[in-house]
Image 1 (spheres, rainbow, N blue to C red):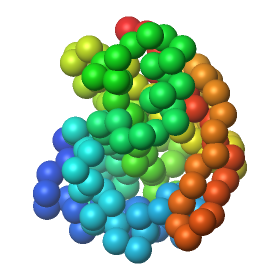
Image 2: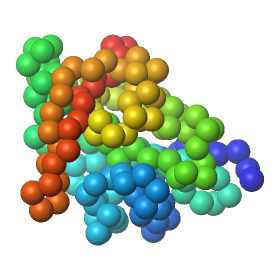
Image 3: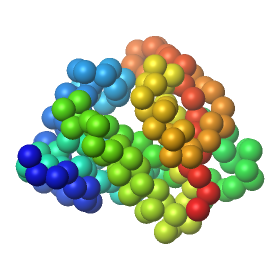
Image 4: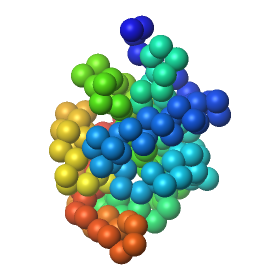
Length: 170
């Protein structure tokens, strides 16, 4: 297996990225939405930029920087920091297939997204379901700071508890 690399998402990556997303959902229950139409979820109009991790011409991971769209993490951060919504973006759609884990790909994808945001004067926030303990450990190890708790609503009236984080200052 060749060494995985992180590169900007290209339209031709869509089928492979969607397949990887469906695979991650089957193993981890993440994401809780978007799996019914993964291509549309990945290509949301809110995506400012996205990247894939790939090895052997297979997409094995993904991350996106997104425009705010009513996320609790955004309002929590803007209230706490006094930052305007225009200076905040959301890190989302982060996943790595089970077979590709333990190679620091989640970290590489996050660092790529953070570098992109910092270069544009944006502060990243995210929310993560409390059940996703491996993701929480990654965020905290990379210096992301918990800024609050929320309830993530999805599907047909379903909900789960979530934590909100802000990226380290540059």
